Length: 307
Ligand SMILES: [Zn+2]
Image (cartoon, rainbow, N blue to C red):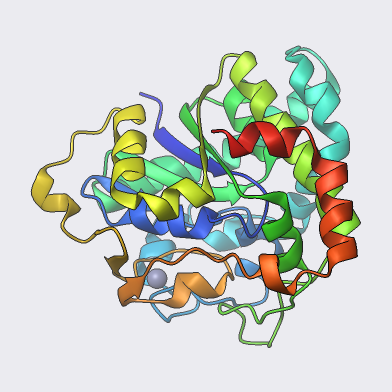
């Protein structure tokens, strides 16, 4: 049986971490965070799991590596990064979205996605959960999984106001998973705008290619977290008791650490976490940048704002 997977797709700084953490609180769900980070920094540079241990020595992730590959040492990380570089890039999206099964790119996509399938299967075995969540975000990876992998994929596409994303991307923040003081990096409002358009359009196209997709906005998730989470639960075909939703209210969530990957500061928060709309862009994003981002991302921005 193919592993059941909820893939949280969207642009960085769009609320993907919040959504994967809320999903991870549900029974029968195991949330892994950004699995794509395993190959680049997670295993090689000794990044931290949310439990506080290094990913390579965390009991949960060690068990996954053992079951999926006979141990993480058996995975050639250099080869994996080469594979990722040859498929998990925006420039490959047009070929990936064609959906042909016979080309070299499609063969590479299937090979790349097979690593994730093994990890998902192992995570379900280790946790005893029914559904695994991967918040790797990236449209090319969502495409590989949705069109070239043996997974039962539910794509949750989360969109945030482009001006909010652009402002967040101008701020450099420390990665909370890095023991080396690495940061998330920054991007110019123009670059963020183009990335926002391409990634969101690609994720939209996936639904037209037969990938089961649910679109929601970060703003609505904050406004009605309980209602939106219920929508995602229903979309994913999960059955959740009322008592299992008690961790969540209209303005806060009680979160466990879990065992997830990724460097967004929100992932480190545990206990009672307040849910507030981050709309600092309205007062802090310079007017010229605000106009630039609005112009570049219109009319997609207008359409999403009605969702
Ligand atoms: Zn851990």
